[in-house]
Each structure stands twice: as structure tokens, then as C-alpha cells.
Amino acid sequence: MSETKRQLSLGAMMFFPTGEHISSWRHPKSNAAGSLNFDHYKEIVQTAERGKFDMFFYADELYVWDRFESGIAQANSIRPEPFTLLSALAAATKHIGLAATISTTYNEPYHIARKLASLDHLSGGRAAWNIVTSQTDEEARNFSQEKHLQHETRYERAREFVDATQGLWDSWEDDALTLDKESGVFADKDKLHNVDFKGKFFNIRGPLNVSRPPQGYPVLIQAGASEAGKEVAAATAEVVFAPKGTLEEGQALYNDLKGRLAKYGRKPEELKILPFFMPVIASTEEEAKALLAEVEELTPERLGLDLLSHYLGRDISGFPLDEPLPFTPELEGFNQSKSGLKRIITILEAEPQLTIRQLYKRINNRAIAGTPEQIADELEQWFTNGAADGFIIGFPHLPAGIDDFVNLVVPELQRRGLFRTEYPEGTLRDTLGFKRPQNSFASAPVG
Image (cartoon, rainbow, N blue to C red; front, side, top):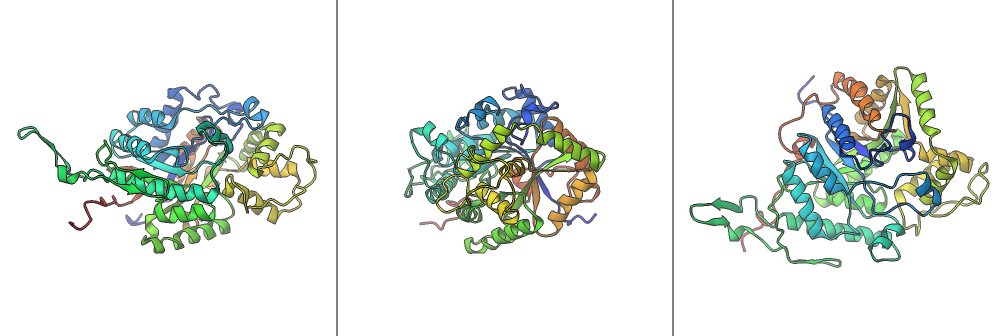
């Protein structure tokens, strides 16, 4: 294999503590009692590190999904706070990146800049931030608001939030700490800067009381596929988690996002696009399909319908299940996840005859089934045909699902020369092939 051959990046995703699937806690191989057990998380992340994954990505939300009774009775809303969890995992791992979802709508830049800088220092430069704007009124009501901010306003705030946070990370120049015991000088006062950030949403003096992170900035991730989300990604993100669709849809999104970078003075290699895949793996295709059917049967009908209602922003429980939706979903004015609704609209445009029952099963079960070779074929096709720089891998159940991927698919990807066999030295930025950002104060002209 040529040393310059392009290789893919892999992120191991955890949405629910027992897997990506909403009913993963019911799977015979899942650790249903592991939601608040550190050993459960440690086992999963150490397995991902054994598989040489670039990062572990912990998705988070700031509410209990109690909009529907099934959200409490049949789904798991219990999850640990991400900074506490990732800090503990930093001590149990050496190389893998540690990423978490953090909302720009229900936090302040100083808090997040400090927490992420601390995690980056304590992990040796392995922190990453999945920038989200949150999406539900349930979250708003946990933060003294009745309604969620409007979609465009959330993303405008997010852009400003990231700018302010990066300014705070630059408060201390890289060589500001002298630590000269002889002279008694701890830091060079001329290399400490107030941010004096003034914007529409934030007015922040600074400086930060944590020195500049080892990576300069923790790696910035974004997952929104709406128009506003894609602009935030083009301006600020270094990794984009993309939805799984057809290869053609993947290529279109890939070209769209890469094509937006130039107006922000960025190059295509400065952004990695990682589509979502959830594989169900077995030694034969027939066995894999049987395992997938087992996963799909885990979700009770009531929960599946309520989840579809959630995505649509409208209760559909009163409509006949064996008939199509009696209305056409529209993105205009929708104030939850527009990318989630867009996925439903795309499905219905291709298959308008789908019944409500078929639709809820389609959107709730996004796994692909196959042998290790077939899964590797699919990933390779996307990677080599301009649709991906790597993948964010979800698992139908945990911890067994990640064991299967690491034991069966990773060796096949390595055999093909598509994936690393060892980590590079350094930080998560080194693993991803990104440059360390320059300090905005240090690079500014004097005066």
C-alpha cells in the first residue's frame, strides 16, 4: 500500500446508552442496566480504541422525551452528563478522540470554552465538540423559556457562540506561561488578551482562566443538514456528520458542503464529511437479514408511531395506519430538526404510496445488513466515489454491536488499505489530518 493512499476516518456513535436504535435496550445482547454504569462506557470506548476509531461520539439531549406516554414507558431517556463522562473516559484511554454534543442555545460561551479546554488538556488533546442548536420545546422549558428559539435565530446564535468560544481559547498565547521560578514570573502579561467580544447575543470580556488547549481549538463537529446548518458547517465545522441516504444523495451533499468552503477562505481538505451507517453483521447475508428483522421488531407500534409524530411535529395517532399520510409535510416554518423532516419528505417523494405503518418502520430502522465483506463494500463505494471522507458508525445494540464491527469489519477495511492499523502520534487533529489553528491574537499585526 502506498503511504500516501487516502484512508477513511471512523467515529463510533452512541445516541442511546445501549445503542443507536430507540429500542436497543430490549435487545438480548444489550446492557440495559448500563446507562449510569461507567464500566459499560469504558468497555465500549476501549473497544473502539482497539479498532483504531478516530473518535467516540457521545450524543446528548437536555430533556426527557415525555411528549408522548411511550417516551417514558417504552424508551430510555436516562443518560449521563457528557463532560463528566468524557473526562472519566479520558483516563481510561490513550488515543481515541472524545466528542460530545453541546448545545449553543442553552449554554454560555465562557462555560463551554472552559469545559472543552479543560477536557482537551486533561485528555492530551483529544476533545471534540458537536455543535448543535437543540430542537425541541421540551428543552426550552428546562431553561426558563416556553418556546424554542426560531430555527434561523438558533443558527445565528450558534455562529456567534462559536466565534466567541474560539476567541476565549485564544486568550492565552501558546507560550504565555513562563513558569519561571527563579524570577517569580508565572506568565507574560503581554501574551494574555481580553476577548472583548460584542455581538447580537453575547458580550464577553474574557480572558479564559484555562490556558490555550493543546489542539488550539478542540475539533469542531456539526450535524445539521438544513440550509442554515450547512452554512454554519461551511464556516466553522471541521467534521460534518451527514445523514444516510442513497449514494447519489450522499454525493450531492458532499459536493454541496465542499463547494461552500471557498467563500469562507477554506480548502476542501479542511472539512471531513462522515455519513451515518448502522451495520448489522453476520457470517452470511441471510443470517444478517434475520438479525436485522430481530432488531426491527424491538420497537412497539405505539412507540414507533409516536416517534414519527415527533419528527413530523404533529400527532398522527388518529389516522388509519394502513393508509398514506393525509397531509404533505412541509419544511417552511418548521421549528424542530429540519434535517429529520427533510428525510421523511425525501422518502415520501420517492414512495408516496407508503402507509403510515410502513413509514414509521422505515424512518425508525436505518440499519444495513450484510457480511463483513458486504459492509466493507458499501463503505468503500461511498468513500471512493465522492460521497464520504469516512463514516460515523451507529450500533443496533451495545456493547456487542461494536465488538462485531471491530472484530469483523475493521480487519477487512485494513486488508483493503482503507483504514489505519495504528494511531499516529499526537492529538485528535493529528489523527484526522488537520492543522493546528493559529492563535488569532498572536497572528495579528502589532498595534
